[in-house]
Length: 333
Image (cartoon, rainbow, N blue to C red; front, top):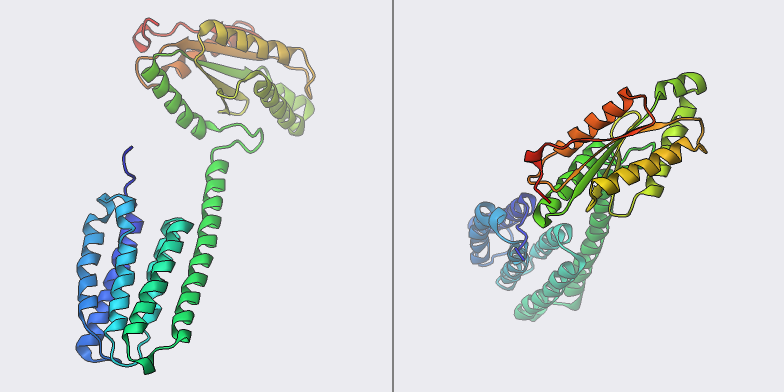
């Protein structure tokens, strides 16, 4: 299985954190600002920042994760080499915030554990008068709180993004997929059909004289009709089928692993169910069917189903027509 690469935001934020820490530590050491400490930790952070900046987007996420413990160790070294009291421990929050934002709870907990160990070792190496349990506990509790808060917010943000992504692909009236989601799902099913050499069918539906329904009964009834037709389609389809509303009164269903006979039978079942009534208004529906074993990932089946649908409309409506698919688009199967 191919390792997942680090996204640019992950790499560039790591570079920013390491670069800022490196420049801050180097500048403080060079200008003798505050407590005196070895400049080597800050200097070592700069090439790490450059590596994250230039190589980060090409590295696997698992490798990029190592920048967090590396940063924690460098902060610990800076703390251990400090003469006198230092507030450098606040920098431990930076790798914690980074890991908690981009990685999971286990990764965050592991880095928090490393902070606890590294900071204890750093304090242990300092003169006794500059160390205390309070200094260790304050830092560890602070990074725990920071990690937990960011993990909670990160999970919440992912849920919101997923919800928005789903809503952007769902027709709000019927709850079916919209045109955008249909195109994406069709691409996936077409690729699978080409790869496995299986048949793929597309059935296009259009409610007959839908404008008349709106004119005679009002748009509220028209909306109820659309919802009812969506329910009929949901009742007749399988879990693997893809059902979408792609226009005002237009619906499309993709039937993976289904040949022309099965697709035509499905379209007839839907047509008969709609014509039998039971909805908010009396109506009929027309359908166009296209099916084959596709050679390439393309949408010729949709075009063919649309042509068959228009033929059904021209022929008097309340009918199912089967398209003649171009031979070049399909294999012999």
